[in-house]
Amino acid sequence: MVSNRILTTHVGSLVRPPNLVEFLKKIDEGEPYDTSAYEQCLKESIAEVVRQQSEAGVDIASDGEFGKTGNWAWYIHQRISGFTTRPATPEELGDPLATMSLGNDYAAFPEFYAEYFPTQGFRVRPATTVTVCSGPIRYIGHAQVARDIANLKEAAGRVKLEDAFLPVVAPASAFPIYKNEYYNNDQELLWALAEALREEYKAILDAGLRVQIDDAFLPWTYDRIVPPMTLAQYRSWAELRIEALNHALEGLPQERIRYHICWGSWNAPHVNDVPLKDIVDLLLKLRVGGYQFEAGNVRHEHEWKVWQQVKVPEDRILIPGVISHVTNVVEHPELVAERLIRFAGIVGRERVMAGSDCGFAQGPFVRRVHPTIQWAKLRAQAEGARIASAQLWGKASGTV
Image (cartoon, rainbow, N blue to C red; front, side, top):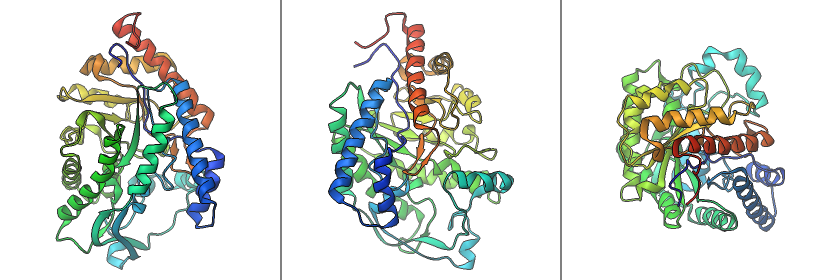
């Protein structure tokens, strides 16, 4: 086990290879495909992407999220029962917590988004449906998560790694927008959702892997609802979902669980993001072993100071993003090292790990950087971690 250097990891989602994307397109469009050929392609793709991570210097690797046929959050809709969709009423169309609005950033820069969305494969359509909780929430993804676990463990066993993890979704991001037509209140619904998601978390942990819980919707919902709602109303919304996640995590090994937030992975203005200082106290209530967050993004890098102003519990580590997914410019290793040393000065060198701001791909079909740049960034991160480790521990830093 490493004791005298900074380990490296990333958020999880990596650019899918073209042969896998062909299968994923057919699955997404409901076209027929060869199931056995898809499963073999998936297994080989995960083996290759894990090998590439090891060669790039990643210590704690993922499956690239290749096993998800949907994006980082919506994949769970295939693994959870109890939700349906129906046409939205006129009243629901005006409710940002009932239907998907594009947020204040979109409203502030409509000309930019009109050009940007087509480059990302997105088409803006008016919201016409609402997601409804219409029955008891149950986890039904046992076979899918078992396959993901088996593929990652087999791939990780073939290469040199410190550990491996699977990214999963938080309650706040699994169904961030819904109408409750079954449970007595939102808390009852969220607790049922948390208990269902716990089955996925526990299966991964029981298999000896680490869990990363992704929760981009927790910060991004601020952009969607404030204004017209207030910061206090948003914090009440977020706090209930933090409590729901803690309910899901109760009794699970905290040291093998990390929590990831971002403000949305799209490379856009982000001028209406909620400040970290306004939510950090809520994050610190979570029973997790570490926090992965954006610290290389030019909109949020200055917020490293927020961690100076709070008491990070001794049983938590910080995993700042020291490479960014929003630019094809490859960070210089010296800059990576500076960012890591900055956080080591706050919580201590043993409690810092190098991470990325967010995923290099947004689901199967949208990539944020070219795949060759993705690997260049991860190599720069590894070199920066070596530079920082040499400064923090001395020239002999390495694996023991």
